Image (cartoon, rainbow, N blue to C red; front, top):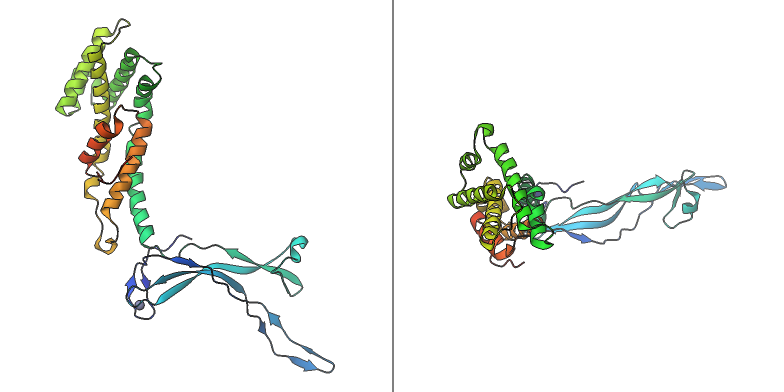
Length: 307
Ligand SMILES: [Zn+2]
């Protein structure tokens, strides 16, 4: 059972609160046998003896922040269950009752109520999952695989990378731009409303591609740089496009959850984006030149974060 998303009410002062934390106390409880009346009769007597219906192990403890009253909840609850396996019957803790052998079977329980950490984690996880879902839509595997190979094992030269980047770009334009069949590539690029700088770069890539379309061609350094920076800027554009709607710079914490520190959320988001984007895109100077400016723009830069 999941911890309840509710406040706890102190039974002493009546204060209602979100518990700061729960601690597990390894308490040992002795089972108290209950006995019936001794019914005596000539030459004998009879009495019923019963072990408790349930047993307890451990407890979850928190305290009321108003009056410091300690509040405890059962940890594990054990219920009497018949032992079928005869080899277990002799084991410790076996109970003989009514011609059968029983043992307490314990169910582990979670914290009874969500505490500060749980609320914090819930908030962070929800944001992270929405980031993941938004980024997954980009399909970095498709965009980035040949780029990563180009950057790493040189099995793909600049020319091959350009061809792959260009064809992925055309697929993207056709999917994004309305009536794409009747538009030229340049018109499609313009229809995207890219940031001006990126629009120019993308058009330059289109021009370069046309120049070399019919021949195997060795790109010069300047051309390689053009391809590289238009790719990385296009990736940044796609990421921003996906993440903008999440408004990560305007994370809202309701007053009752004011123990949640937005800065710590930002730290975790930063760590997550560092890992996610670093794994899918092996961009040169990734941290300083790609991730940092992106985080600034998203408004989630945390000054203490170091990769
Ligand atoms: Zn209280």
